Length: 151
Image 1: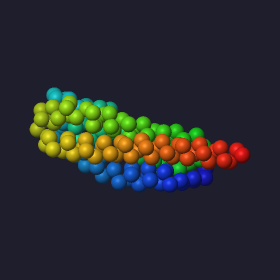
Image 2: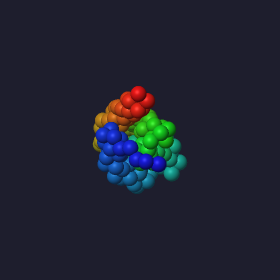
Image 3: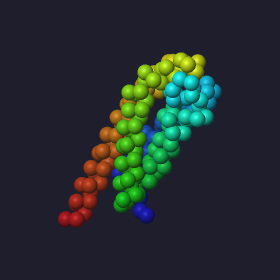
Image 4: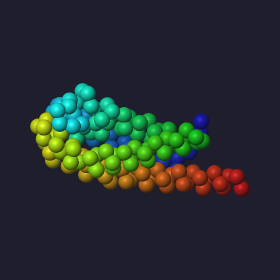
């Protein structure tokens, strides 16, 4: 399939690649402190689907990374991948930023540094907004390009 990199798809990919070290560092710290999604749970049980105060559920960064490469494709694959990136951004806002009180309780119970939970939430709020907005604009741009090609 041909690649169709627009300015928004390129920005999304750069945002995702810049975020990956944060996700990897959060996963390492989650296992180092054995902190789960809520007080009393373990990293091993929660990191893949529930996340922790230091990292979102691991399926989200993995889906984000895969979608960032597929978003440049033409057709439905690129559209779905771009939409997935926006949804992951909304998930970051809801799961990490708005869930901060629960994350702080879990961090305190596991002995994890509380400042790190604040730091992760501070990263995920603008990251989520950037992913959601750039995804929206990329999808809008695709729609406009499709209309132009029909006329």
